[in-house]
Length: 264
Image (cartoon, rainbow, N blue to C red; front, side):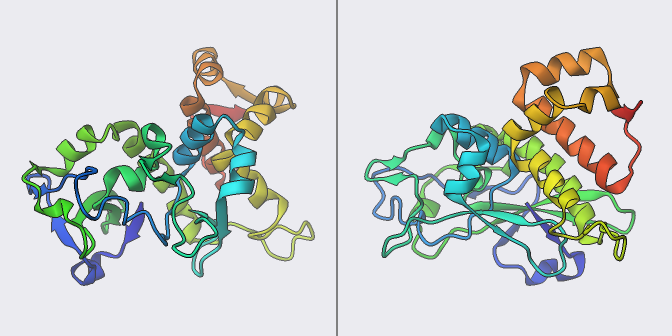
């Protein structure tokens, strides 16, 4: 989910969609362009995407990151972006693409679910984020000619993207903090965008299996107080554990006071 400059929103590609605007789109194997969009992509992966994909593949999040992602730090941001690595072939196809379609379809990424709708967060003068949508099918797309009108909300429901939408918005609120530099300089501890504190924050966001081990098999619970009902949810749910990770990043990196966990 991108952060959008309100002053430049009219310059962005695609058709802006309000809550009540509709667009038509459907993708199926009967279209001549089927699977053609799954090539040579800058596919951003959000934490919940990695959580779902690694489970689909039966591997740990650490293994998934090692095998399937490129980690890129863009200018003006102090937290890296995670992109899906394309296959090493002439067309640079998605590594999960097969002749029959997507091999991880039930757990496909948020960007794939929302295609051809792109989402972003636009921050107003009061600092409150506003969700904005753009309809942006590629020129070769035949799905845009299908008679299947939907609003953005209907499309999210149709694509079973409600949880992806919620988790990605929660992550975007954390990621947005990193447009300011949180890392102290000259402190003698090597804290910068590549330092140990930054690596711990990345682990909490993207490596759910390592973060679980950190929470339950280190001194974490001796140092932090967490309410029993929340701790029960965290033990039972990867998504709740990930939310705890987001909260911990706010506290650990930014010193934001948390209602969910606090130092003893």
